[in-house]
Image (cartoon, rainbow, N blue to C red; front, side, top):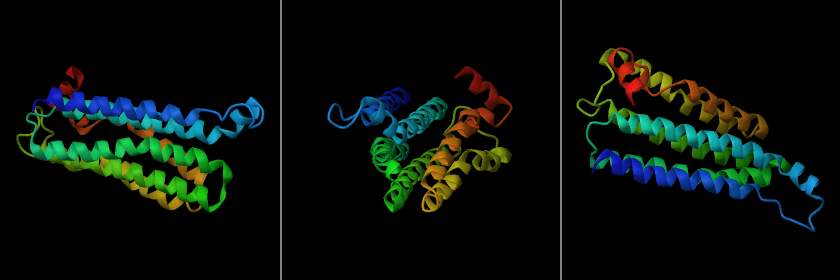
Length: 209
């Protein structure tokens, strides 16, 4: 399979997932209080939407960068990519759950944010698996130098460790844990994939992509 076909299929899934996020923002309509009250009560939905929108968007950007540097698409890569997309599609579901329960507070809100963190952790681990696959010999058009691979892993995979804090922290403070998941998204806006940040030729490849 060509890289183009892999990326086209993935782009379609990303597009559907990011569109589904907006469905959680609808108000109930007349009969459920004033519009102003409903909009104010919906703040968890807006917050979760922003975090999830940029999380999926950043995954899409980094996915494009990673796939563009792949030298050959193998069956293993296809399945790793499917696992990543599995969690991407679950993000709108987890986002809607947070939107429904966060404003209510209590144990239900904590569990909702913990579930959200679990989905993001699954996404992070599956993307890390794709990254690890790409570090193998002959799999990247411009490989990361061997001496820089561990540094690249630490930088790019650190988000997965923080998502574990989100899961645990959700049972202490659901809003704080949700905010922490947003900070991870901000981190990955500036932290490029290792194929772009390993230095030397890899940096140049990133500029060409």
